[in-house]
Amino acid sequence: MAQVLEFKLPDLGEGLTEAEIVRWLVEVGDVVAVDQPVVEVETAKAMVEVPCPYGGVVTARYGEEGTELPVGAPLITVAVGAPVADGSGHGSDKGSDDRSGHGCAEGSVRTGESATGKSEGSGNVLVGYGTSEAPARRRRVRPGQRMPGAPASPGASAAPRASGVSAASGVSGVANGRSVVREVVEGPVPVISPLVRRLARENGLDLRELTGSGPEGLILRADVEYALRAAAAQERHAPAPTVTEPPAAATAGGIRTPLKGIRGAVADKLSRSRREIPDATCWVDADATELMRARAAMNAAGGPKISLLALLARICTAALGRFPELNSTVDMAAREVVQLDQVHIGFAAQTERGLVVPVVRDAHARDAESLTAEFARLTEAARTGRLTPGELTGGTFTLNNYGVFGVDGSTPIINHPEAAMLGVGRIIPKPWVHEGELAVRQVVQLSLTFDHRVCDGGTAGGFLRYVADCVEQPAVLLRTL
Image (cartoon, rainbow, N blue to C red; front, side, top):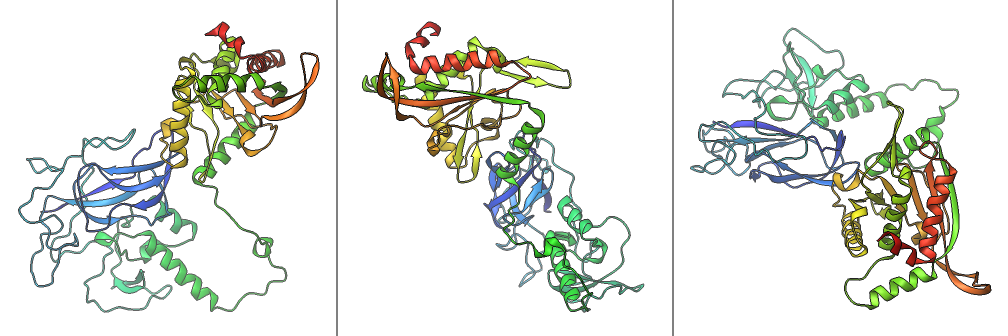
């Protein structure tokens, strides 16, 4: 006998509460193994492949590609513990009286089912989501039995839906274009997804008037959307009310882009930073000629190439060692400035999906070669959308190299809840007084945006001056190595 298990969108960790379906990796009817990825989702921080903790046949998928689901919403249902009557995973009545339900080929043992017949999860889904205990079993329908809200039979006579039509015997309903007649049922409406309930509630739709097209009469989002389209079409044929002046929203042009995913996360974080942090910015021009020569000499000596970003990060960790106030966060609930022991440097990376800030952990304990390798690894992961949530959080200080965009300066917004960000402009030849004479030197503008609650201008200026001194005379770093 097949046991239908429902797999819900797990807790993705790092405070994430929702994810958008990017790509389904399985179809209804596919046989899946324990821990096989079934869907690729995009959170506000990363792309994640979600593995299913159950093995069996996929009987339903919830949500189309592009749909945003909250944590805890159903993803798929899997039938385990029974043979398959046909390749669809749903069983078949054509040419056979087999009613055994969903499963795999006859004689095989269902993956994910113990010897006692109890389905067991793998326990290996994602952060904060355990599967050692199977979720509650969904009610199964025996031959001849009908779930509440399901059509009376496949061949039942259909009646067109009409607003307000009701009788003791039934109420008309719509399910994905099919008009059906069902009995008025007391008790819970067969809806699982909170998104479906919210969609119906926001549009004033009574879910009891619908007949679900999903497994066991489950009402899907497609059912609600079809009903709303049908209602809208009916309203279009009704006499339009006289409007003396159209509302502004109806006449406004332009393109609307939803603030969700990466863009939404960036908007929320920057808005919070601007609301909560009293930031200030100071800047200085520095002669980077000697730093560029030092890097060229390192790379000419053989071994892995050292990146400029890695050298700047090494300078920042040395500066934070001298001015630890800028490696802090503010706890307003306790009204305390929390000075952090470790330095985790985030760096701004522009990708096709938007701006992301990967984090190099324990940057203070890394040399230039190790920093170069980690920057390269995280940059490639950012470009391919494979950064994990853990690689995008936990930063204590941010390095922003906006010079790659061909600009000299900026006043960036602090990456909340950090206390400071160093900005680096482009390095270009400029006239510069060097050793008392006018010369062409490689000049860069450095800017520091800092939280004025953690320190005053003297500390911020001292930090920035030390960074500039190291850029101009890399030998200064030798004192801290």
